[in-house]
Image 1 (cartoon, rainbow, N blue to C red):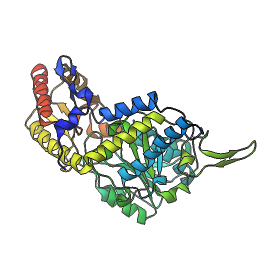
Image 2: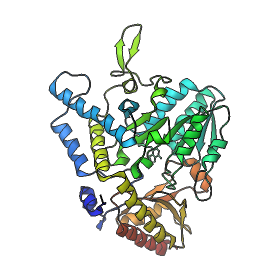
Image 3: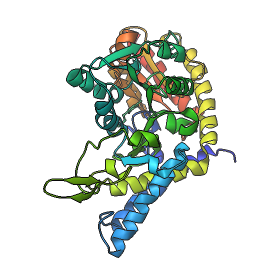
Image 4: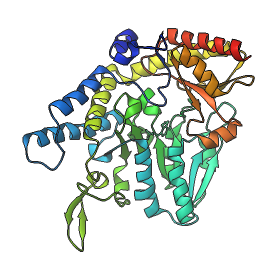
Length: 407
Ligand code: PLP
């Protein structure tokens, strides 16, 4: 099946609007992606026709909502190549997923002096939960740098491990540099050494096929709003044998089987890690977004974005006053840049916005990476499945205007 970007664009109503009198060129997909009509319709139907709380009622609507909600677990499993849908915990997104690993798994299995290996290009969501453990338990964080191209050498990650290393927590794709990490090599070697792996899939799962069984990871969180689904939805893959090492960290309804005055019996995993009323409608919408992506085919999406990356790279390389951070050959279509000279990233993004081009400016929740690069902020153009070469041209035209204004 070929990929028809015009047909895909027609599925996203927001893409036909204007911003500041110009056609919208949405290049902030790394922060959050737009939603196709099928997702918007699913949210509408869920609230207008099919809404009730899940798991608890014995009435028609509750059963219907439960069925729709629960069907998402199998969709996530299929999307991530997980053999068993019971290895999927549904949640509100990657941040919750990684915090679950920190509280429910790491707090139970690490002690003072144990080490967690991280790369310098992690998002704060994959840093701050580990700082909690450092502060509270005396766990040591060990940092691995990226090279000049923004590549992370798997061997450098493995070389950073000692006999105190209990966890490697690295991203599959950088949200700033676009670097794709060879996490398969890391996970398989880590496994052989008895080290657990937490691979942040927030960005990678949007842009390429993922197979968690093949990667060999223990934890793989994803986030719905970057996957063209609603905000407040997401999931994490947990290697089934890890569940036995985990204690629930959010207590409440649904995650228990029995509660008495002096005892409690928990539900089985994955329900044991899903307390309280979940994001019912968000999760249902998330399932529809995954169906939409799988319908297009992740290989097709990846091929389209590779061509877009190559085109954008050529065009941006032609601007000799622009510094692009991250030159990894196999990177995804994410370009962070600064303009040589004094213009601040915020000023650049404001000028781009006047031309209808939406990018993100700032430190992108990656403080250690910014320190490593010696920068305080960059502008980031991050592409998604619906972007086109003519939108790359619009970005370049708007950047040329910036250059004229600020040079
Ligand atoms: N990890 C990476 C690499 C990200 O890009 C993001 C979001 O920008 C996150 C984690 C956090 O995702 P969320 O805010 O959806 O929980």
